[in-house]
Image (cartoon, rainbow, N blue to C red):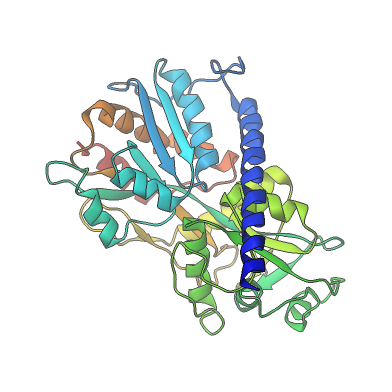
Length: 379
């Protein structure tokens, strides 16, 4: 039995890897529509206008969160068109892998969907010289969409307890009474539910777990972390892999950033939060929830606390804020200028405005002002 489960996981991971390749192709194709003056395709790119290239040079390597991959692609193209000779190379892997790469000193900054943990901050002091340490700068907001593929069902409402039971294999078929109660007009088939989750450590997984823990404490009693904690389901690599599986498999459900649902035309679940109407995963609805976030980091750290139990009308509660991780002091001298120049652009009015076009939500103005102020001080 264990051997069969292991084979199933490996097969799902392999499919996920293939899906990643496919999704990256889709991303590249989509990016071509955005721009490109230079670059391999020869497509003309419009240079970003709110950019100061001072001090930027050479290649800047970064890695981490796949949740912010599409935003990074969009930003990097406009930035590189404005700053010839500078190459922004963001490798989409996972938040966990990005933090490891940052703390090993192999990247100039990391993308992460969760702020650094105390042990990770301690590790960062090995690469942030001169008494510095890693800090979290919130840069990209957005909804975590719950995507599904169920032939004949175009509109689906779920609440936190029902989602918790689906993702922990306690609800096994689509015609379960709990789902019927939330969708009285839908023709729900007696089909097995096939939940997909992330195969690797993931900040998206951690944020979904935080939501389920806060909003469905009686039905989700698993530890919050980057690793998938619940029994059942199938694993796929990255948000690209999970979304690709949901796209292909009738009866499936999974979670990923809205941009992946939008690009692949995957139906998304409306969440019954207790507000006057179920809430759809949109950039505007995510912004309403993120606007209530509070800065809880200390010193230069700007990590945030989100309210996953909001019942405000139109506020979509399954959100993430994804961070850029840099040293407050002791950044590498050969990449510091490029890190500051590029991240100043991503935090600029124009940079944040770009997010809505890619299915993300801008960081609230008050918090973003603190990000700019902090960027001016990193050294």
